[in-house]
Figure 1 (cartoon, one colour):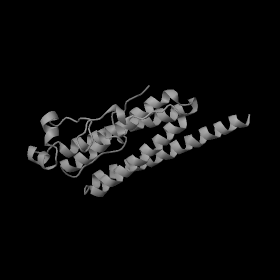
Figure 2 (tube, rainbow, N blue to C red):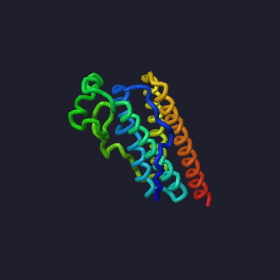
Figure 3 (cartoon, rainbow, N blue to C red):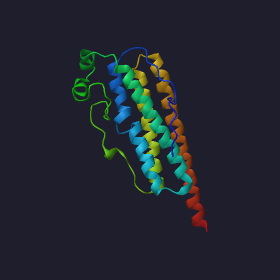
Length: 189
């Protein structure tokens, strides 16, 4: 199904070690509206969506996994040279104690990822509206992280991710309209 290209979808550069910024990015790594939740949500929803939308869900889910890889790279680069004291100061002491420098799927508050984040109603329109909301929440979160960041190199990658959320939201909106048109045609006949 996939061919893995051993490069990031968009380059990730960081200016300096910044564990606090890494902590904020964990929201997009293992949070309710993060990249993992989105990828799994769309992969799961493919099974109860009309055939003409399956490809869209698959494509966007695949891209969300690429975004997850970018976020992991950002977190790694922001923390790889951090001292235990810097991690403590950033509020990551508990993470360090449990995982050292390994990444773990949790949000910025340290709450572990849960399958409860993955929404699926089985109604195509309801699911697509959920997907639009998820993309808009991710877009907003990226903007808020950019607002908190003083790293121009990292902000470039974050802006790329924010704009991809906008594109995904637009594609899901188009899918809703397409499915609504199909429903209306069926009512006429």
